Structures are given as C-alpha cells and as structure tokens.
Length: 248
Image (cartoon, rainbow, N blue to C red):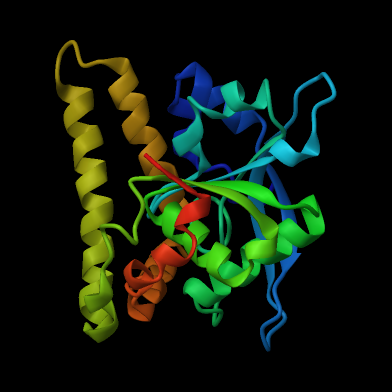
C-alpha cells in the first residue's frame, strides 16, 4: 500500500463487511499504452472458492461514480463462495490513483480495464457494473466483446444518469461541482453523527462513501472525466449487446 493509503477515516469504520473487504485490499501496478506509458497503482480485491470451480464463471465487479469497490461490501464475500471474484477500482476512481497529465475518460478507463483482464485474468469475464460501472462494462463489451462472457447491469449509466454537458462547462465550474460533492457527503456524515439514536449502519455507509475523496488526485480525476463528456453516447449502442445483458 502507498504511504497515503488507507485514508485515516477508514479506521473509524465498524461495519463488519466493510472492514473485512478493506482488509483484503491489494494494490498492483498496471501500465496502460498511452504516450506517457502511465503506470497506474491499481486497487482491487480478489477471492475464489476453496473448492475447485470452473473458470468460466469468473466475475469482475465495477463500482459507480465517486464510489469505490466498498460499494460491493455486502455482495463480494457471497459471490466469492461460489465464483472466483474480483472487485476493481478503475483509473481515477475509488482507491486507484489518478496520474497527472493522464486523462480520465472512457478511452483511458477502457484501456486500463483491458490490461487488467488480459494480464491478470486471461479469460472472458462476467462484468457486473453498478451505475457508472455499468457504462464502463457496456463500453468495454462494445470494443472487446471477446473478453466478455456476460454483462450484469445495476442502475447503469447508458440507460440513465449521463452528464454530457460537462464537456461544455468551464473547469472552474466543474471544480466547484466536485467541491460541492465533497461538502454534501461530509455534511451528511456530520449530521448523522450529531443525531441521537442514528443507525450505525448508515453512519458507516456515509464513511465508506467518503473514503475515496481523500485519495490524491480525486478532484482532478472527477473534473477530467466530466470534461470528457463521459458515456453520453452509449444509449444508441446498447442494442448491439443486449443479448448478453442482464439488467437490474
């Protein structure tokens, strides 16, 4: 783990599923083929059943916008009892570092995921994407169908939730939006801590949702992705792969 990881707020989390997943976090360098030859310190969790199972059922979990693989803290251990399972934070999101001068956009995210699937896993995978992770999964399947066995989409961007206007907004406004996102989550946590009899599960959920915002480059990555226009064009292309898709 890097010197600035994990963020201090992680020590305050008591949720058993979150703590268990956090203790399994690993980091590994992935080099993506840009001009800079960027080396991405990539954060992930990997587990497999103790008994021998078919490699055809391997699952890769992709979290949503301004989130991390902790989004799957309830799901990961349950899947891993039956399937080899990976949860991966992609370039610029979660606990995976953003690299100065390396753009965070659909192309760089796709290259990052392709390198992981090719070099770490080396077989077609079941991609499970939530929100923005669903858009990443769709985009990946459109470009690299041979590496995808099945898509499972949970409230996926592409069907809803895109932000194409970001590419037309000034950087200063996008930075203000990122600051507001950080403030809104921090304010929600502060309010939850002051309210009597607040459910501890909600407090931990808020803490989990804030952790990635403490990572170096978090704000720059969100601005870079917003400037790219994101996955606004996916809606017209989903029909190309719907025979391989399970939508939740």
